[in-house]
Image: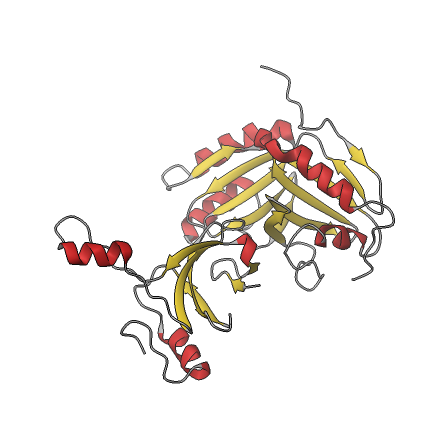
Length: 109
Length: 190
């Protein structure tokens, strides 16, 4: 069971109150991009064993999208943060580093 | 104008907690930027109550104001007064980006009452939300799910909780609550 704290309403939500939104921090490539970029955007996803960043929606509550940093191996949650950021904020990255030294996700460490 | 009726016409169930469909209740949804001080001031003036903090419920003369999300509050009042409240609110919020809607007839409201921790026990069978008094104190609103459907729960006092769900699932929620409160099925957990 996964329990994430919604950063907007502060409620500790059970997994069944949330809707999973897939990988976080994707860059959208649309009209004008190359075929390679569009393919990456549409199909290519991280599949890590360990630290992962995801989008979730508090669908049975306040209805807001947010981000979560968690481990796919242990289900440990490192933190949740606002949807209005392009990369994980420093405090979240520090929280991950404290638990998993030397982690890497895409080009983030 | 047709005569308004509630979803289950005041159905009741008796068990280790009592479940009652409350009947007609007025509900006005207000959406807008609650973080905007000017918006908050205009809304407070129209309703006569401050903007509630996150998850809180404020009781005022003639109604309750419930925090629903960072951009939504729900005003609960008498069914007949909802339309008048809407005119007051719309006037007060003119010029702000907002939405005011009468959702009274889209919802069903139940009251669950019992002694001790019986109400929390019955609800804990149906929702993943933490029902301990430390996590859902009186005066706080929890939007969550009851079995398969969305619902909002708050405690008016330790022995009485109010549950709001969509009208279309009123029968389902009533059945759930009645089943969860069958005599002999007490958990004794809290």
